[in-house]
Image (cartoon, rainbow, N blue to C red; front, side):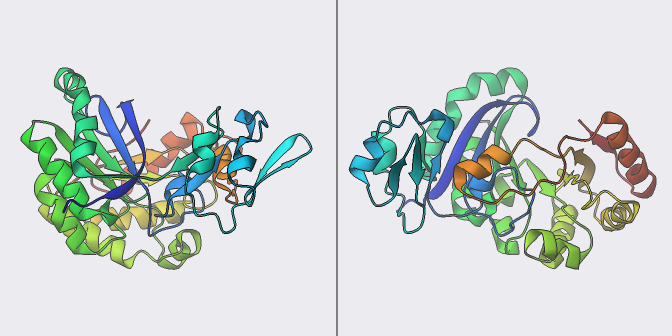
Length: 302
């Protein structure tokens, strides 16, 4: 019997998630709950309903099929999330896409059929597929099966992970993964717990092991204003990076994304605003230089 996993989105044409033109598969579910997450709809592994108020035409179709969770109040439709089973009846009735189901169960077989549609772009650009999230390594059997199919068909494979998973999950996908992206959030363990819900001991242990046995590991640090961008934070990152094996090739500093607020609204979650705009090039260059001086691998930002 084939395994299955919840997928929120399949994004085609990405240029920043590995070499060439990529198809990025976003899985639903994550062991961390970063307060700055720019894909909050991927945090829970459970299927859920997304509601986009700006698309709603107040036709009342959702109220007809599910009056317990949809109400018309004046000129607004109110979606009551408590107790909703995300059966999807309201989304099927919605003519504008204001209501949609997030978290479609896929199998490796049907996901591979989606991935292989872009074979021409992979061949022309040296691209491939990137498994992301949420946390794709919550589903190691699924990722391994799909990645194996890709490798057998000449498709480059990449995994993007926060590494907050059991080591055996990582081991399962290693034989079929050409490239790893590993996220580094915060160096200090207590601060990491405060902002993500977990300390980083498991993450760092997995990172050290992975850097010793996989020859193509790339680090990513999301730079969050006032959270992990001080000189002390950078020094902490550098200390971690200096202790890694030769498989760690470089580190990319990711600018803060201030545009995720609408996703929190759509998924009914509380938004935390760390800054009204992303960092300037000058600010990112300053951080890059500071990190470069202290660690032993190339550092860059986009």
